[in-house]
Amino acid sequence: MTTTHIEQPPQQALDWCLHVTGKAGQACRVTRLRGGLAASTHLVETGVGSPAARAVVLRRFVGDRTPIWPPIAQEVAALAALADCTLPYQTPRVLGFDLDGS
Image: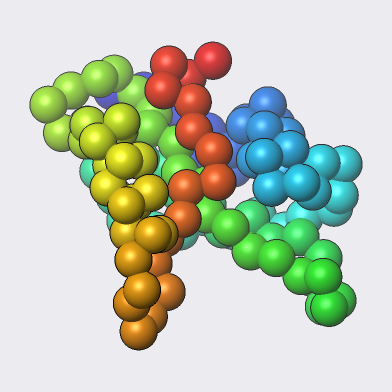
C-alpha cells in the first residue's frame, strides 16, 4: 500500500479543499488527525483567531483500492440524508467530493 502524503496532504488536495470551502488562496493551518485504515485525514483551519475562522476535515483515501475502502458514493448519500434531518447534535456535512481522485 502506498503511504505517501500522510503527514501533509499534497498541495493540489489542499488547494481543492480551500476552493470547495470558498477559502481559496487563504492561509490555513493543517493538522493531521490520527486513526483510520484507508484514509489520510487532516483538520484544515482558515482564518485562525478571527471571527471568520472555519475548520473542515479533508479526508483522502490513499493507496491501492482494497476491500477495506468504504463505498464512497454510499457514504456521501448517507451524510446528505443526515444533513436533512433535524437532530439535537451536529452531523458531518459533505462540502465536496471527487470519486475518481482527479
